[in-house]
Amino acid sequence: MRVLGAALVALIAVGAVVVLLLAFTSRRTQAPELANGLPPHTATPPAATPTPLPRTWPAGLRMATTGTPELISCLDTNHDGRIDATDGPQFAGLDIRLVPGEACAGPGQHADFFAGSPSDPAGYACGAARPPLLVVAIASAGSDLLQPSMGESMGVLDIVNELQARAAAAGISTLPVLSTSAVFGAAMPQTSMERWIEHDVTSRLAALPCLRVALIGHSHGGVTVSSVTAALDGRFAGRMYGVMLDRTTALYDRPATEMPTKTPLLNVFQTNEGWHGGPIDQPNVTNVDASRDMAPIAPSDGGGGPALVSHKTLDDAPAVQRRVVDAVMAWAEAP
Image 1 (cartoon, rainbow, N blue to C red):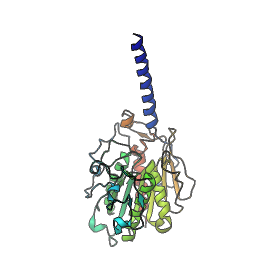
Image 2: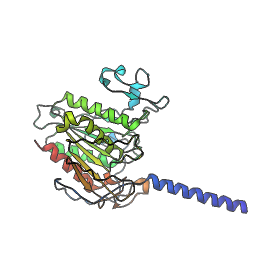
Image 3: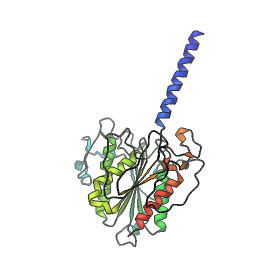
Image 4: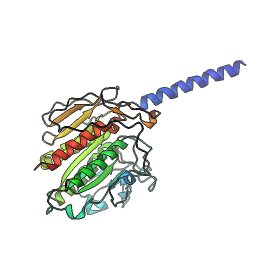
């Protein structure tokens, strides 16, 4: 009997530890509103439950597109442990170091990058009535483009869908790019993704001089947005717009502090949790504290809602999504 009692006590203790770990890993952020200069947005009542998960991230795109999700580390075609110009001329200027045994693990089951096709191929050109728009969406840590149930940030996909629909109605051709915030199997996964997206966006902007790009990132993806726009600020500031949703460097592979000084940034954050973003004091940054916005409770937290936004659900808040799309469209439609 004593043995049974001791076993029961041990089981309860283990359960308590598991609950604490789950509570820690499910932290999120939200905030009230400090918008300065944003276009008015239409209030949308929050849904009671999140949108059902698509089979893959690209499958969740509503506008027809082609493309194949990629595992970036598999592009090391000469197997020397890095992705650089020796793997192909398209990688000139790129240098991503890979981890032996972790690179290209599980191709076909995991993907960290996807580039789609133009919504209107004829309009994705410099002779079009309206300049085309590249839409780069970057998910938070733990996300996998082939496994939507891993990680969070599915609300970013809703933003891309609404943005593409609004742009199409305005006569703007768009091309969607979906990405995780880390290169799977890279030595410095988050920094490597910064370099990858910087290289990809530079190639696309250089190839099409009229192209503009909106980069939208949640959590670690928000750090990617600030780092990439900072790196390209001197060359492409007038052609980029960045959106950071609860940007945080917690558990990032380095203390990334880079910020552009000219590229306009929309910084949306919440302060409902210990893990959250915050205001950025720069003239090119519009800060929005969305802590009072509502969103469905994340499935990883048991689901349900609506409730005040958290770090996980800030991107799911309909009011935040509308605010982001309104801001990007105001910029994209400006001369």
